[in-house]
Amino acid sequence: PRDRKGEFKPQIIPKYQRNVSGIEEKVIALYARGMSTRDISEQIEELYGFSLSPEMVSKITDRIAPEIKEWQQRPLEPIYTFVFMDAIHYKVRDEGRIVNRAAYVVLGVTAEGSKDILGIWIGDNESSKFWLGVLNDLKNRGVQDVLIFCVDGLTGIKEAINAAYPKAEVQRCIIHQLRNSFKYVPFKDIKAFSNDFKEVYRAINEEVALEKFCELKSKWGKEYPYAIRSWENNWDVISPFFKFPEEIRRIIYTTNIIEGLHRQYRKVTKTKTMFPSDNSLEKMLYLASMNVVKKWTQRYKNWDRVLSQLMIQYPGRLENYI
Image (tube, rainbow, N blue to C red; front, side, top):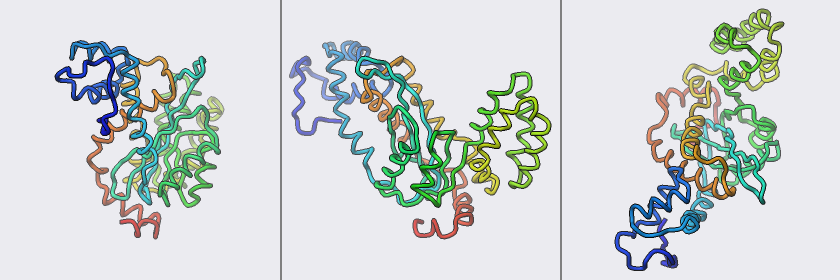
């Protein structure tokens, strides 16, 4: 962002050096691509022929902090049809120690079928209390209702959703559930095991799904009990899937939408073995998010059909917002 008040007076760049009017924008653009402050310093010297220290680069990127705060506190839509929640993990230096940090990303789909990143929360643990804080933040920013939350196996998430949005459906990502099962199955059997599970999650309704699951359990249960048990333990957040038509199932079968976002994050953070602070991690994820959101110009395919199905599934919830 430009220094609108004209208070930023760089000490290293010559005051009247030509062709430096876009220096801050250039620095921030390079930072958004995942370059380190040292690499940016070298790049600026090559491009402009003057010295800009890594410390000064860091100070320039710090200038987006108010922009991040404003974005994280901005008003949101009153209703979201789908909300995807997931976490991605990084190493961060904290008071001389290297600690694990999770960036919790919340992505929403509006009643018009468009996607948006609702916020990023950086923390060191998951719990019902943590997630309730995130959900209350969404409520305070204007989110009155959510139809379906699509989540992975995040600790405490279901309890928090039930407390904050008691009418919302909680749906476990089917593909994540499968991957979790595969941890307990040796490679030689994964293909056959996976093919049998297709009969379960492609079932036309929950009754048929349970029949297929019982058949699968009788075939594989003794050999791989933990793989089967993970489905039994999570059936309450898997089973909503079976009441939905194909248009909705296609959206919630995977969390591809948020995994695609994570791929973009990894693209810009892959050279970082560690971040010097939570703030530096937040800056990079925010800038990467803005680059992704700019490309989200189209709504979901066949959205009119999806919306009409949602209105049938959840009567009276959407009518006031469309």
